[in-house]
Length: 364
Image 1 (cartoon, one colour):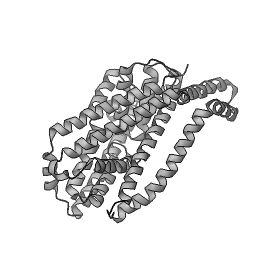
Image 2 (cartoon, rainbow, N blue to C red):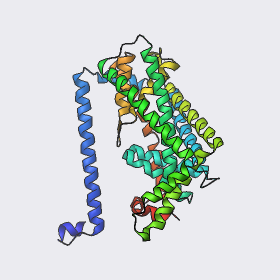
Image 3 (cartoon, rainbow, N blue to C red):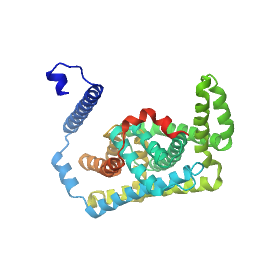
Image 4 (cartoon, one colour):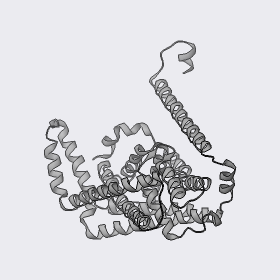
């Protein structure tokens, strides 16, 4: 880089790549600064009292927050156990420690990169467990379907409790209720259809996919066939009744732990949220699960916005306290894992440039 600036020589490919990465970070920081500025001005215009916000946050109960952090880490372990069931057709006895480590690194990537970080976890698992990447992408799809169905059940519970209560939601939350109900029904029905097709017609789906991909040149057809076969193998776990029961049990346990984590966060606010019971926490969790569909790389987005809306318009919590709850919940459930995931990633010596040749490395 110094040669390029002072001697006028041509930059090397490494220097060009470094420059591109630097500009990406500059743009990301600029966007983040703009978002923070807009949020700051918006809260200020609404009469937001930062002194009250900081006083509320500083008065949190550390024992309850510690319990919430422990439950978050336990939830990652539960995800690793569920993934072991999902990958059973291609690896009957995977390393639980490796799955747990990959899960922590994967969720760190999601927090830092947004939805593109979803692919980090299946990639790591495929490499460390020596299984095809396509099979782990199939496992990711199944995991997301089960989580989505569970989230829709919780959201449906929240909707039923709100609609049958005497609570009058504000205009913003009323829109969420109206649109969310239809969206939840449509997405839930589509997810169930996918699960039924995968469970009952996996082999037919494989043959149909191969038939549809006959246009692929002959020299690549063998590799495409291996990819499709590996993907179908990855969803074979749904064809076992025992595996399905285990997946449902782990999914229910996962969401019970998540609910316990949110309950611990609420209890950390002491008298400010003293009226919050288990049902209220479940209602809040239902709306948070709905907001989690929207994700801004590095800062989240939908979760915080929906949390503040529900707390202020539905439970009439002061704006400062509602904002504190949203930020603390986001920090514990999304950000707290980042230091652990980064350290594990450094220990693993991750090389992100290898993502371009990922299929060649992991597909047999």
